[in-house]
Image (cartoon, rainbow, N blue to C red; front, side, top):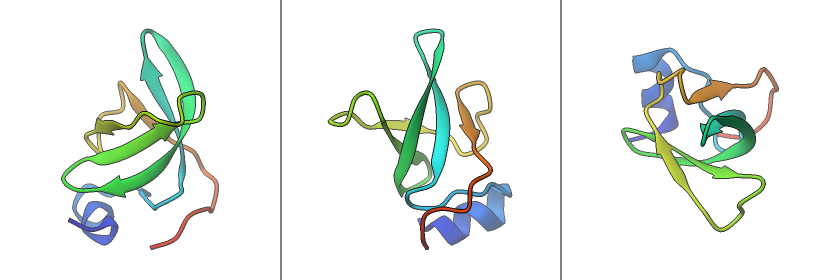
Length: 72
């Protein structure tokens, strides 16, 4: 899967290095998109060794920030 596929199929602004907010244990935390398959893989800023997978359209747990960052 590629980021281009996710953008076209789901209409989301997913890009490598893109800033997102993720919900973990009832709180929202900032993170960065590190890769994509059928899911968006995110590294939380406060837990740099962890990675979490989210469906690209799961707005209950993943929110894209409006910054123009990242590539691909």
